[in-house]
Image (tube, helix red, strand yellow):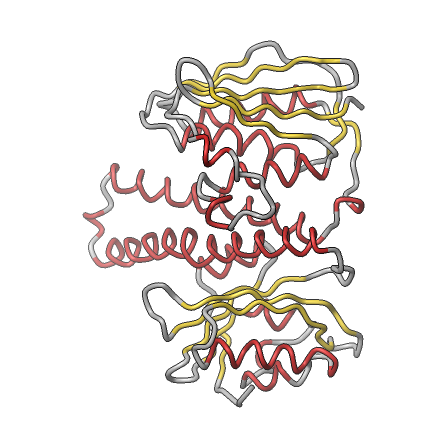
Length: 352
């Protein structure tokens, strides 16, 4: 893998956001050989960042049975034979045991010499192709959010804070409101990344569930959305009192359904309505909006495991995460047109 000088970078808001999501960030410059990483990349193995000076220091800890595959994948992206780097391997931890990790990265769209990505824990039993497909797409999603959404938001925030520190007169009420919006958006993205990582680390059969009062969850997320999107109208219809089979991440289902409907609207005063019903052993919740709707060709691939990541995720993180969570609860998600305009997303869960 070639010895490259590396360093642990000083923690930035971006690093803290990634760390809160449970993943590590790293960056490699193909031209200079510079390798930067946050502390978590070292602590995932129980080490200190100061224990690593070169890429080879990390490589030396890879299990012998995994080393060749990891080295080949790394060399391929460094030599320009591949635009992406995606490997799963065992790393020797500080106590001598091995831990499964996964690295996923790609070349920068704006600087082809730069390869950046994430490292996160991975379970050992990944033989099933369906699970591998889901992991690959989820990792691509997390990597995209880390490299683009959170990174861009926090770069904007850091830039303005530096300017305001030099010239306090720039801290106008409107400017501060904009910066607070950036903070809120980055916080929401970090929470969503953490939820995605939770789903990556567990197979569907391993997800622990319990009776959850869905009505209370919906009402809490409705109030949250009303505060976050004051121009939107978020209404509540009939909501059943029946508990459902889920877990604490059910909040992410409704948070993302409501936020997705608002953020993809073509007008600020969008109206979103949440209704529910009980049908035998099933409990359904439908989130409707009066936005532009989702084209039929997009509906067809939103949850198709064989579709490309771009096709599946083009309409946002929200629907992907909703589908992953609800599937883990042995439920279903359907997407249909709302009339006269908009989208209706129906989640069906088992009654507890």
